[in-house]
Length: 293
Length: 133
Image (cartoon, each protein chain N blue to C red):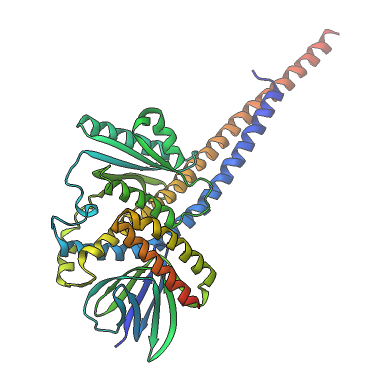
């Protein structure tokens, strides 16, 4: 049985942990709201961009000189996996899930005889994948210390990927990120970004119905539009992931706060029992002492 | 016939309202858009977008480049950077112009694509200085 003093310090320490976790939960909740608003604000641009890309790709079709970003290099040998994680931990399985999904995807592709390259966004993903797949890591980008994610951050990643494609270093690129499903659940999503997945049939039909004129010509516009569309996809993934991160942290910290509460309850019960036992023992000693006289 | 104009940046929907005419700086010359315009998709160079109510300019906005989709009912401008002309700083424009010109010297030696991209940047910076001045 631990002494009363030991129990008291234990309770005090768990209490202060609980204070920290509940504060972190509150912070995550307010950051989550902001991240959700940011994701919401990015939606109109992405939707309109998608509409334009669909119209253009319907018009260009599968011309052999269509840009690589749209149809790929025609090969399927070198895969780039872009793993989007957070810069900080203490968010439950948020980062580990991405790490695991990336590792599995890499192993699967390698079993098929493909070459895998990995680009990590966020510090935790790099730390996780460095242990096992360090030879495949091409670069790690991190936004640690940045208060707010800006479009230019996503653009930098997009430009990087476009350059790799243009230089013939990669054939296929896939984004792996946590999609924000609800505050308590995030879904690991693998989304192929190069070559661009074909638009759903209904939108193709709608787009070709409103046959557009292009100025300058389709190829020039596409060459400028596609890198931008790629950056937008990156931006959306980063925002989704940021919202997911705060959601996951909120859930994890809520759990931790509750666990700390349970622990405090158990420890105080033990403490009270020990205290009561001490009193009883002292009473017995006094009574038996008095009887002996 | 008015056309509904939307100006969108990746970070948010900046403007959405109905105007009588809008002049956008398309890459091959300024383009006036009224309601009922034939559908077009155009790229934009750096320049100013002018919004007309009746025959008066109500707002002037600087864009550094982007895309526009025109249909009979609406005109959608997708731009990375949009600023009201009054807020454009000449010093910032000159700084960018100097950087873009330096970059152009390098890019011109590399490939025609890099040269084109650098030239666009120079033009956008020049338009920014003009808009401020």
